[in-house]
Length: 332
Image 1 (spheres, rainbow, N blue to C red):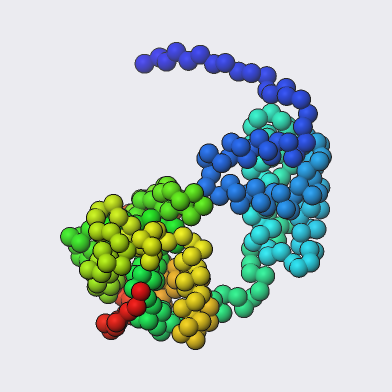
Image 2: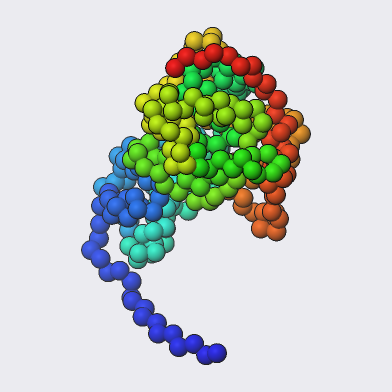
């Protein structure tokens, strides 16, 4: 079948010359409707790029000037983490790529070879060893946490979900009939900044296995839910509600974890440390890397384009975890 296609090609955008600051303002206005982390990009550009390049005409900015700006960030006092500099450059590179597509610049000057950029490593080499939460610490936190916090800690530890994904769970997302073990449907996240539910960071949906010990914790929590959260555990009710019956915000969840760590006499940990624990613990117990990745990250690359990790494989991996809980009397 012959297709009739009518092409309308413009000669480019002959807009008036503008500074990088002016173009970024327009770029961010469009970005906030398409990218969840646009505020992070705005902050990095404002704090680290605009002071050096913001008042230059965007069409006149060179690759060397961008390199000099990044070099200045590396020499900053106190020093910036290499990952922060890389994220800042990624934001600027996106700005310049869009500018090239808009015809504002002929070629993007954000074309620094990878070997000339900072290495993607921690500023503090001992950071990850210190933040690694142990199985005994996880057990202590869950065992001694108040009624509204224990389910949150357990879901984070036993599923590896991001705090925003865990906070977005409803009781209706729990499928107790799934085989070989129950499953949680993860298809949304809770945005702490807007207080709204929205698609997950990767805009994907997945089923996450519910470990038998987690299933027991959720069962106990559900029986106490109406009294503690002030509402019935209906399908649309938040599974992980705080003492006010609301979804957990990232900042309040982080403070709750920090307080419990201090109370139990263990090093302070964050929400993300539970995610690190889930992945590391399963890997140490012999779970296959690709199975762990299928539960925690978007499946990219050639391998995942030809294969599909089954729920049964994920469930078998999760059942390797052993963090037995003894029933204790919790306090609100």
